Image 1 (tube, rainbow, N blue to C red):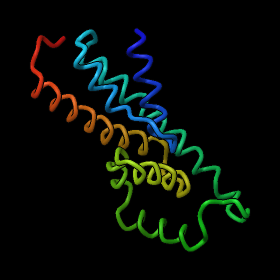
Image 2 (spheres, rainbow, N blue to C red; image 1 turned 90 degrees about the vertical axis):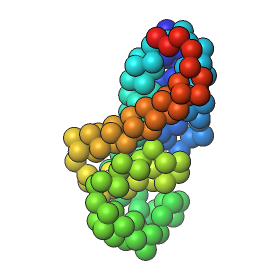
Image 3 (cartoon, one colour; image 1 turned 120 degrees about the vertical axis):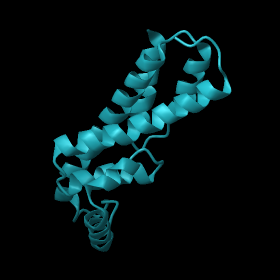
Image 4 (tube, helix red, strand yellow; image 1 turned 90 degrees about the horizontal axis):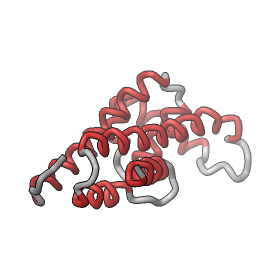
Length: 147
């Protein structure tokens, strides 16, 4: 149970701007072979998606502070981000699993008022696919009696 909880927390934090490596923990837990593979994938995905929802919420709230001196983006950077997001659309959220870029995408989606239902659906697909691919590679390289 502690393995699942630790993975959830690591995946949640990894989806924010705080530094965390959920992939390494997932691989370690897979190699430990004491947890269900499907369970680990579900927990990692859920934690990572919920962390991205926090970014989306921060993005939704961020615009009211855009004229503050400490705000991390200039008006021109916001316009560039908005143009990029409109050019590639909500499907760019499939790349939300990428380091740094993915975090920014999830915040931009909140700033640009992406509906929560589509945000969660697309982000879940991208993040789940990343964890499934990682698990498949791990299981292919280290084939033992998997649960």
